Structures are given as C-alpha cells and as structure tokens.
Image (cartoon, rainbow, N blue to C red; front, side, top):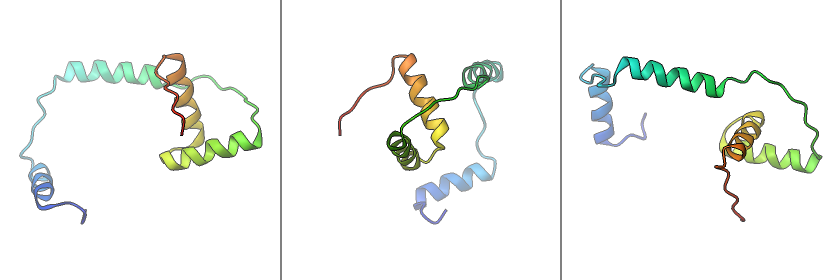
Length: 90
C-alpha cells in the first residue's frame, strides 16, 4: 500500500469507509457471472507431448505473465480458436 500516491490513498480510504455504493444491476451481474462460469469451466483433460525446448519456453513465458503454465497454454488455445490470437515477432 505504500506505493499509493495521496489521491489514491484518499480514494482507498473513501472506499474503505463505505462512501461508495454499486450502481450495477444485480440481475445483470448474476447473468454475466453465469456466462463467465460457463466459459471458463474446464471440464476436459488432455495429454500433450512437447519437446523439452518448447516446454521450457512456455514455462518461461508463463512465469513472465505471472500465471501457471497450464493456464498459459489454455489461454493460448482459447485465443486461437476464438480468432483472437495475434502473432507478434520479437
């Protein structure tokens, strides 16, 4: 918390003291949560063989992203099948 500037600290204190209230529709929130749960439900398991070099590279990238490598791989596959995977050359 020490990395907050004065304005951020003021906002946090305001939130913590209960000065904020949600303006969202509870029914809409429940609907969106239902969609999210259905989308991210992982109910299938696969076995995948990779070269050691590819596996090590995936693990390294997942560490940089701050997520487990299985989650990283799952995210890549999801982006690919939904057409949102963008290839960038470094």
